[in-house]
Image 1 (cartoon, helix red, strand yellow):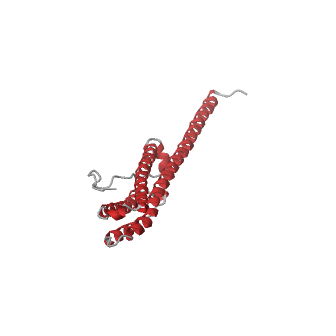
Image 2: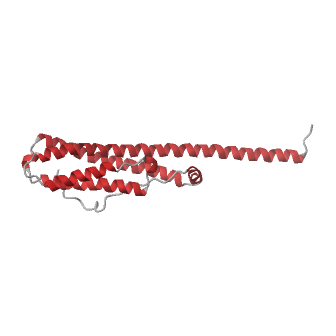
Length: 202
């Protein structure tokens, strides 16, 4: 049975449309999977950030206990550190809900703790007997190492978020992202006044 010219054209058009739909579907699946993978990378980086901040938080009770052992140490300074730690540990963010406002709240609480610890270290300079104790020296070294890890993990998070955001915002990925509710991730920003070197001695 011979097909008419019109029938051949109709089959060709149907075949072409089917091919376009198939390519679009496969491309959409590929984009979706890449978005999921990039989002998971951001989530993992966020977990690493929280982990190093938790490590710092865990060091503080021992640091406070060691400092408390020194007679006449400024109680207001210790109280500020304890309160800042409590505030910092109360801010927990699910990476799925990570947006500008929640990251700013988290960063603000952590910056408050950083400032309290900096003031504590400045005050410690007035107590040579405290600086001379091995326990304090070890805690100080651990705290300094943790601060370095925090900087590294924050940078890693920003890099993961930047890669995800770039992929998410480019066309046609932004269409797929919008269809499935993928949202841009925020970045850590430098603390206000960070451009001025702090006068803190460890």
